[in-house]
Image (tube, rainbow, N blue to C red; front, side, top):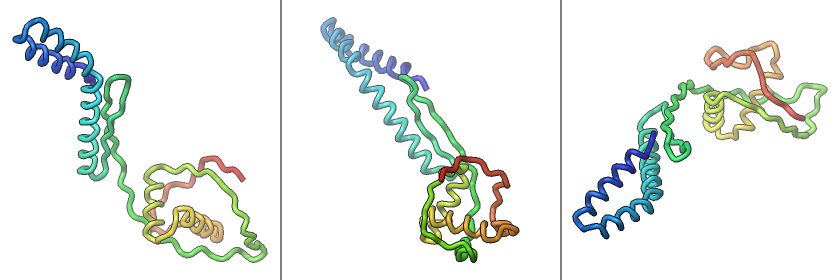
Length: 168
């Protein structure tokens, strides 16, 4: 959204208001207009951002953002896909015989589609545990029962392909 036409309109209005005051007042209005352009542009951006935030709060699955591109604003509308709530996961089974739990912890990086991430966060919050604990329990359950699908038919399946980066 180009803001320049709005600023030009403000400049014309100020010049028209100063014209009856004579050349000195007109010159002062021109100087004032040049000084106020940055403040007026910022005020317009703040008004657009506030409007976008208010619109976003009134829409259920859509967000509106104002992004600054150079001296102009871009309005970005994003619609998220609703994700059905996930039932709680069963408790994590104990370690398999012959595989003692040493307590060692490894770190991995996991990239999730945003709707899946939000569903995991909701499920963990519903159970009153951290996302990490919820994921450890879900992965542990899947590893302990390799022949069984990790989710029952009431769960959402996100496919069989896994991609990403892991580091031990």
